[in-house]
Amino acid sequence: MRYLSTLSSAWKITWKNKILWVYGLILSVIAGFFIFIDQTGKGGEKLTPAEIKALEVEMQVFAEKHWIGIIIAMIIGLIIFGIIVWTSVTSKIGLIYETGVIAQKNSESRDDVVKIKRGWKKGREKFWQVIGLDIMIAIAEFVVIFAVKTPLNMLYKNGALTVAIPLTIFAVLILVPFILMFLSIQILGARKIILDDRKIFQAISESYDIFTMYWKKIVATLLLFILAITVSGFLYTILCAILLLPVAVIALVMVILMGMGSGGLSIGLLIFAIPAIPFSIFFAMLTLVLQESVWSVLYQKIK
Image (cartoon, rainbow, N blue to C red; front, side, top):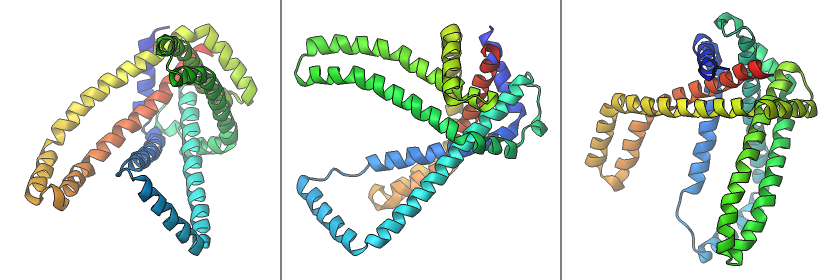
């Protein structure tokens, strides 16, 4: 199998069928939102034990006074979180389905073949099966990592570094094939469920058989895709840096004029972020669509 032809066919699917970018846009925005929340949560100053204790007391008093509002806020938060998860998974399923349908036609399809409503309908139909597959893969990964990591942690706690360090290297070498296998089963299994109407356990079984037969092709395609995205990402970053250079200069001038401590830094970052964020979302959007197209094309070749 020619690996470059897989990437070439996937790129044709991505570029010809720009309606697929709707899925990519939704997924990239949601991913960016969770990354932002994660990074925001890591920020801030570290509190002393006394400050933590005082904060806990304040939170307890606040909770006793406003417990009804807290419950309502939690319910609303859970509903919003559920909507985000549903939208993300449904869009992912729709993208897998549409790229799979096009890949069956040798990537000669045009925009009029792709139907967003059809993809989301498939997403609603297969939502719980795909969630179930993801949960089972996550449990399997957790069990394997826990089984390897637990004895290593005990060795490190007991100070047995001469034994722990070599075993850690050996453990990583063992875990890498397992992680690749789980990732492949998740990717192939989703397509078995979405495109071939398989049940979860049947999809896992058939995906495992495919992986054992074609693991070299799967790993080679994965590495080639990572290399292509890395190189294109580097070149895209250089292009964005050139295009955004005037904006960066304006932002720097604002920081110098207003000062670091008087809001100048925040305003400067905001000035730079407003045009920079769309560039980042565009690249993430294309990458996500291309990624699913690559796996859909490969799936048609090895299933």
